[in-house]
Amino acid sequence: MDLFYRSTRGNGEAVTASQAILQGLAQDGGLFVPERIPALDKSLDALAQMSYQETAYEVMKLFLTDFTEEELKACINKAYDSKFDTKEIAPLAAVDGAYYLELFHGATIAFKDMALSILPHLLTTSAKKNHVANDIVILTATSGDTGKAALAGFADVKGTKIIVFYPKNGVSPIQEKQMVTQKGGNTFVVGITGNFDDAQTGVKQLFGDKALAQEMDAAGFQFSSANSINIGRLVPQVVYYVYAYAQLLKRGEIAQGEQMNFVVPTGNFGNILAAYFAKNMGVPIAKLICASNENKVLYDFFETGVYDRNREFVLTSSPSMDILISSNLERLIYLTAGRDADKNAAFMKALQQQGKYEITADMKAQMADFYGNYASEQETADTIKAVYEKTGYVMDTHTAVAAAVYHKYKAAADDGAKTVIVSTASPFKFTRSVMNAVDAKYDAMGDFELVDELSRLAGVSVPNAIEEIRTAPVLHDTVCGKEEMKAVVKRFLGI
Ligand SMILES: *Cc1c(COP(=O)(O)O)cnc(C)c1O
Image (cartoon, rainbow, N blue to C red; front, side, top):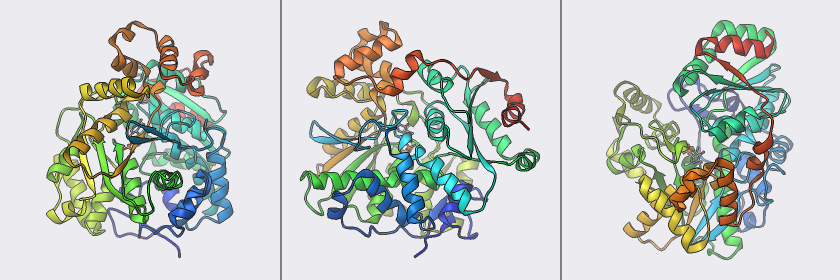
């Protein structure tokens, strides 16, 4: 049976999966949601015998029903290959009474790779299926992680080009080095003399520029976005929740049907929403534990039912979670409002105009599967140090937020359920914060010296992603003002 997608804000036409992937955002500004969440059609016992790639097919085929088996398998096999440094793709480490689901074994050593390594293939396949002859031009503004993961995913993918704008003085030296050394004839990285908001605003203007769209179309190009609200990013993320449960079943760590908890370090709410989808597909998940850093909008929301972004933005050591508007939460709002687009649209309007909204008691009751809490900067650092000293396992700052919240949950509600902590970045990506948490003396060391010291301490070899940038040549050195972005894009496209 075909599964169609509808916008969270309008009662417009239902679109196919491939159309939703191509469009990214719905025309009314809403997010695409499948008309129903499909149930797994294989038993967890059967899934326990499958590889990551096979599991990906079994999960994704249920969402992307207008893709043929051949098309979907081709996308999966191009994505989850030797770019990952382990055959398991998403291994589970048993540490200190919990399991860490390591989602950082891809090209850029952070969890964004799980979806961004397959999105380019889903997009180009979607373009073909819908008879789009233009090349797809991905345009992104980044404050660090997403830009690099998108570059790595799209590099040298036929039929695509990717342009990334980043704030010239607003990303870490390692993040900048990762981006400006990006290979691939279809990649273009540009520093903006401004902050992230300038880059983001500029990109939005380019997306809305009708004259530019016409010029591009005439030259055989059209823009698309690799934003985390794209259904082509959400669906691949459901896979590793199914896979993690099945693997633990296979290892005999859990019994058939046993309920487990997942703790997810959360920013934009995409990763944990994928866990919610997995639960609704039939994976025995008890609690979805939503972990925030000091930007604890979501914790307050789950406590009170009020989403309120009117607060100070805190810069933390887990920057990928420094977010005050969690875009993907809109999908949960829509679903718990009984798929009522008007009701959801009213909440989103209030968020835009007053910076806050309050859900109904009935909606809040439907969110009982979620538990929210947060970790302070000190708690995050203490967790890294304590787990390292006890077990030798070194985790990154984002994962440490989740681990700290896991301990708070256990103290508050000891339900005895086994727990998976979703590990979203390699400690080598946030080496300085991680090493400072272990011992303040490391602050005196240089970036790459620290990398070697971490490798020694953790007994883990330096990941390729870091090794490469030590010596890689700079391939992108364009810097422009925010008013020059359009000219720069046109020059790159040769129009
Ligand atoms: C993006 C990111 C997150 C947050 O994930 P969301 O899906 O936005 O909630 C957490 N940790 C790391 C390392 C990330 O890159």
